[in-house]
Length: 268
Image 1: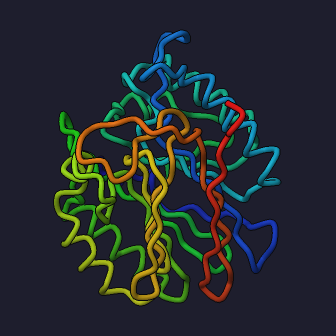
Image 2: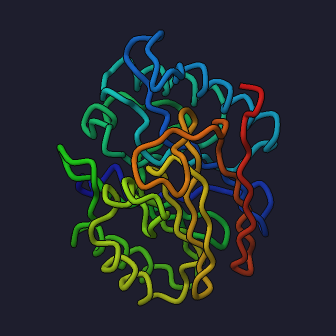
């Protein structure tokens, strides 16, 4: 995906000037047909349970990040459904594509009063950069030179702001061999580019359907559970986990600190 005029930076205002509250929902895998299931889970039902939990448990966040695999089949019906449900949450939303998404259909149909396609968000003392790590027709990902240039341009334009970098594929291995083989094939290059900037405080992704978090070199590296099916941690082969659907809530502070917690819908 190229960074078109529609995807230029967007300034939004935080409810509290010293704290940015945001929620990440990822890997929804919505089908065109409402009754379809992924590994036995109705993904619309699980998404609705997660979105309800966001409203009940996380107050009114400043923004919501939808980090890919929003659809399972790339259908107009799946994006229309998600757009309606997410817009109804009343939270300013930004998105990036995953390997299951159809980027063109996503751009055309995932629209609403609260849904924006900008890939550079400026809010309080922070900037959020959303990178496209997808390769058409492939499960694994790569961050292209164009995307890396976009990252550098954003960070150089606002060196005074702390940065959270988001993408779909994992920037660090999870320990689950099968999904790590389907991850970011140039993760070393991405990490080298991230190391060139001293204002990056966090890197956030989806794809792996499990919770991970590491603090390395003053940067928080985080993955987030799917809003539907979970993958079993530390599994050499494909395996489904027993964990409940979930989402991640983050607080970004004016001094560059990040506090975060994963919430799961155990009642689902």
